[in-house]
Length: 481
Image (cartoon, rainbow, N blue to C red):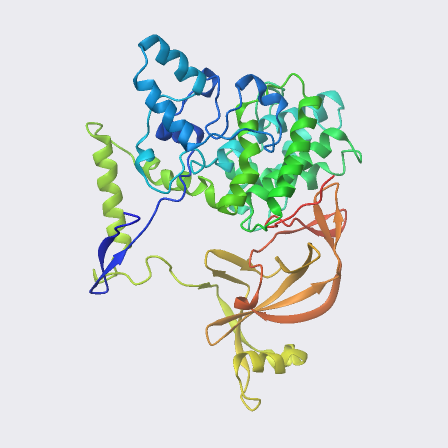
């Protein structure tokens, strides 16, 4: 298909469309099954589908610089060799090489089975590394140092003033003694775990002493998580990620010697190279697939004779409904519903912001004689990103230090969205102890069209010891400590 293409009818005209498979995002078991690697990584001498490292050496090789990567040529040779071996020899070499046989993906041109079956940051971090190490940290804080109690932590999580960006993915507030140990993990959903790591510095920061090694290593893990779930990366981001990840893994091994070094910690060492090849790791995770699975899980079945058929039919009927208009015609807004503007009011922009009237007139091509009665709202959703008055936005980077603006007003002019932003003092002070920037308001207002924003991701503002703080969770860089 990548060379010959297929012909598709687009708006009444047949056009040749060519495509190619670039990468396959999936969890470890699914990727290994699809590539015919050993699904149970614990039963293979070489349990990584990307490199040749032996399972007994993963604890001592914490960066990807000195790893011998698998190649498609050697992999194909091994798959061919397995076919000619006896049953006993096949079983032995299958375990040594960590493969079961040849995959259908080997027949695809321009697809590397040893590179393009990418690692999933959701399953590796949010459902693997983070729950285990967070359990070790809480055990240290609760039982070893006795800095907090579980009742105090649960009450703080329940009373935390979550922003609208975290309202739908609040963490569970039922931490128990059985979930805190070096051999157990904290039970949370992936989205809740991501929120928990972002707000824990604000909750635990006042209780933990400065430069506590356990706390600092958890902050490094949070930095790794932020870099791996950010929607934006830079050419230097993989190098920063490699350094922080290496320091975290080596320190974690020293702090928690009883904790097992799970294979996912090794799989994470391939994230920097994966980011360099394919871009932001957020685009490779399975979070959206898991969300889609919820559609099928919510279906209540009474007949179990042919479950795949029942689910497929249910899904196709749903898709037909979504792609049909009110009069059964084809919907024109299936892929994008359009911008969602909350209820608001008309107001006189020139009276409230006289110093920005000329700039707005220039941006909107409004004559000075025209009466500038515009529409204002407290919330707007654009391309799936929701902005509310009071949120924060990165306006620019100066030498990799972010400059922030606080959203004070949302103005609609001729269907175009404008943000009134209050500038904050620059450079913003970075509080390493909580991984948040402290913002100092200046009272200086600027108006910016939405399309002119360089970094469009909204950020949550919180209070920490009376100061306004923000975590730049969509960043291409982190401070190394």
